Each structure stands twice: as structure tokens, then as C-alpha cells.
Length: 327
View 1 (cartoon, rainbow, N blue to C red):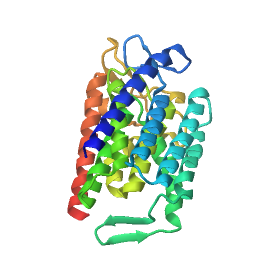
View 2: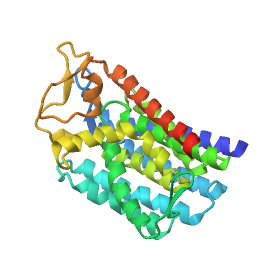
View 3: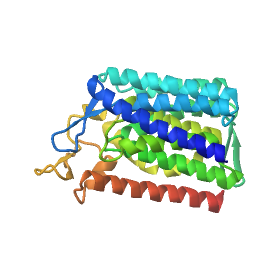
């Protein structure tokens, strides 16, 4: 247990250091973003994806040699899946004008190592006594899940820390449910949480680094892999309701895969004093989660983030309670 604690502390500290490094390097490259909800729209490094993939690969390598992740197929499959997703997201960061269907189609390739190496159990347990064995359908669902979950997380990357916070809650639910069921902690999920905690220190308001498309897709991959390995599909699905709300209403209005940056009308904007985020009241714009939060009462960015945290807290608590009562 003490070795595990020291290892997790190492991954946490390394994640902070590597994220801090790329928060500075990014400002000297083309990988920069503009913080839309701060006065003057300051430049922020958007190389969070590079920091995350380096943290994950190094941490997984150390975990494998220390015996924390002692299955070589799991090590190879997870490393390959993250690498594929990073490349897909990095290409999207390099060429932001790619068609809207690029990410939903391309992200399915991240499922290939998981399926080929059979890092899954083709059983879905909804509630106690309700079990489905899906030997043929489950691999197909993995491909679909990569496309859906990764892009759902990407859609909520709208304010400082929003996508990473939601991912942290989903991973925590996966860890808690696994512990309640198995009376032990899932090592892989613990590794992801430790890495993400380090990244969040610099991604939370006021952000020093953005995840970029590569980073937000990696966050979604963390959820998918943790869920598949720990068999916590339905509790995690409940915890992701804010993500689902955001993407459902977005797609329902837009009727297709269109980058939010390419929308013709504003969804939200600053007030005249550049302090509050307000609803743009544009009927042609989708009802995103951020728009929903500020619709009745304009909020500062950190206030909107607090509201988002409350939503994730509620949905995650509901996920755990549902598992305890029915699981």
C-alpha cells in the first residue's frame, strides 16, 4: 500500500511538472488558444494533450515495471489506444478546419487495441440479476462508445476546467463503484485520477493551459478505458448526465457534427463590463449546458464552473446511490 501511495504521488507530481512545462512551451508555438471569457482574451497554451499523453505513457511504463499494472496486454493496449487518440486529436489541433465528421469517425480507431487484445468482458450488468452476455455486440459497442464519449467530453470543453472536472467525477464514480463491488481499488483508474489531478491544478480557473482537442479526447479515453476494465458502465453513464445533456441539445439543434467554433450565431458572450457570461438569446444557437447555466442569471466564469461542479456532484452521487440500492 505504501509503494502504491509513493507511486501515485510520483504520477501526481510528474503530471504537474510536465503540464507546467508545456503551459510555457505552448506560448512559443502555434498551439495557443484565447481565453474567451476573460478581459482581453489572453493567450493560453493549448498543449494540454501533449502533457497528458506524456504523463500517461511514462506513468503506465513505471506502473508496469513496478507490477502495479502487471498485465502486459493491458499495458500495450492502453498505451496504444491513448497514442492513437492523441494523434487523432493532434491532427485536429494542427488543422482546425477539418470536417465535423472527422473526430466521430476517427476516434473509433482508438478502440482497435482494446478489441484486438480482448481487454474487455462482454457482459453488461445493468442491475442485480439483470445481466446480458453480448459476445458479438459488445466489441461493436466499444467502437461506438469511443466515438460518442470522446466527442461528448470534447463538446463540454468550453470554460476553464469544465471537461477535466467532468472526467474527474466520472473516474471517481468508477473507482468508488468498483471498490464497493470488489472491496479493492482499481489500480488503472487510480493512475488516471492521479494524472488528472495534477493536470487540473493548471487547467482549473484561472487556466494556465487548455487541453486542446488532443487533450479533451484523451480525457474521454480515460473514462472509456476505466469503465471497460472495471465494468462500471451504467454508474459512469449516470454520472455523465451533464455531458450527455450538453451534447444531446447541441446535436438536436445543429442536426449534425459541426465544431462549436464554426457556429454562425453566438451562444453566450460577455456583458458590457466584461465580467459576466450571459445568454446571447440567439434562437438559432443550441441550448448548451453553459447557456443553460447562465440563462436565468448571468455569472462570472468561476461561478459558472461552480454550478457545473454542483451538477456533476449531483449526477455522480445519484450514480453511486443507484448502484448501492439496485446493484
